[in-house]
Each structure stands twice: as C-alpha cells, then as structure tokens.
Length: 309
Image 1: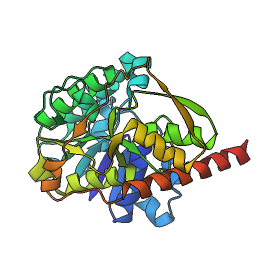
Image 2 (image 1 turned 90 degrees about the vertical axis):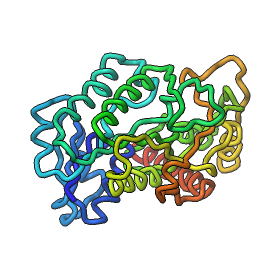
Image 3 (image 1 turned 180 degrees about the vertical axis):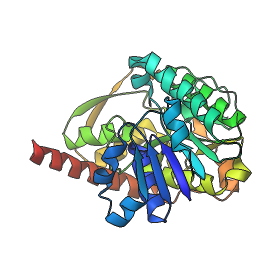
C-alpha cells in the first residue's frame, strides 16, 4: 500500500515507518522533520525507494493536497503532544491539533481509510469506574481538549480514532518527557525524585505495540470506521508507585512522596480494552520485559550522549 503518515518523523511515527517499510509498504512522511528520517532510521537503498519525505506542515493545504496523490490510506499523527507542550503554546496546539486535522479531513478523498492517534487524556476527570469508549469525555487540559475536538472531526468523517494509554519504549526518536522515561533516566543518573499522586492508576503501552495497533487499524479500517478504540493492556496497568518501584529495582532511582502536587491531566484511571480486543488486537510484549528493555535502551542513549559530549 501507499501510506501517508503525518507527523511520521516523531517518536511513534519512526517506529511505525520502520514496521511498515519492513512489510513492503511505500511510505510518504509529511512532517517538518521528514528529511531527517532516512538517516535516523539508517534506511538502506531499497528502503529509501519506499520512503518519500514531505518536509512541510499538515496545516498547509497545498502541501497536504499534493501529498495525498496516489495514497491508499492515511495515518494522522501530527500534533502538539502532551499538556506541558500545549500549555507552553496554546495557539500552536489549537492550530496544529484542531485546524491541521480539519484541513487534512477536508482534503482526504471520500472513502480513503484514515487512522487518527487520539489519547486517553481526553477522558479527563471521569465519573465511571472504568474508561470505556462510551464514557463521557471531560478533558481538563488544552492537550486533552484539542485532541477530543480533533477526534470528533475524524470520526464524523468516518475515520478510526485510537485512544492509546501512556506510551514508553525504544524508538529512534527519544522522548525524555514520558513518565517511564523520566523515571528511568533519573535512576540512571542516580537522582532522587519527588513522586506525586503515588496511588494514581496509570496504564502503559510499549511503542512497538502501539505501532502494531495502528497497523491493525489500517487493516481493519472498514470495520472500525467512525469509532474510537482504547489501546493498551491490563498487564500494563499499575499504580504510579508500582512503576517507580519497578524502575528503582532496575536502576539507582531513589524517591520520596510529594503530597502537595497534582496532575493537571488527572491521569488516574482503569481503561477497558475490550472493544479492540474483540476485533483481534492484543498487545504482545510482556510489560516487565518491555520495561527492562526500555531501561537498557536509555542507558545506551545516555552512554552515547556522554561520548558525544
């Protein structure tokens, strides 16, 4: 297939591109950093023939229209991600997450499969015991609110919305701000942290499993169209304190509990993954193994950076 991936040069996109190129698909990457991808992924000449960089912005209608030519399906990852980044530049978050999504949806030919990466952050302060796709969403942050609006735009157009839990794990594009990464890097640096909301329930998914979920949605887009699907696993659901303790066992992390700070995104929730599991998707990587691999990866990244400096 010929697949357009917006935001493909990022943390999740680079993992997805590696997977899809390995399966023989042709990838067009619409991202301002698209030209960095071949070197970042160390693509071979044959793989370069399957990859087309489009170093532009999803908000540019002319560019998007051109990028959509000869495309069989679209994966929409382009966004300002996380509440800190969105709070730092609300106008950019609104423009990219909402306007960029609307622009893309307006230009996609009718019937072309579209998979959109939403987020469980749109649930916000939930009243249900478990977050289900039928739960009322109450996003609290700019990030959650803009992604919720973008998701509605996509679903109203017949696209598929995936709502992943918090990602972590090995990628060619490092994201140090993800919780598991922050904790692991602190432990590797022998840093003492203050941990707030230790009893908060946090579900996690390895980025490789998330890329596989996107691939699954592309394959089942007709069945899944117009709906939202939580993506994660029960095995990857634990309290924040349990995650800290597991990482402390793998590193030199030490910590103390902070009773004064709260999470603006109110991320404490159990999530049901029943809807997508009924279609046949389940995560594959055992959580502890994935966590150990993540720590080892970040250890190697730290070592490489130390040598570079």
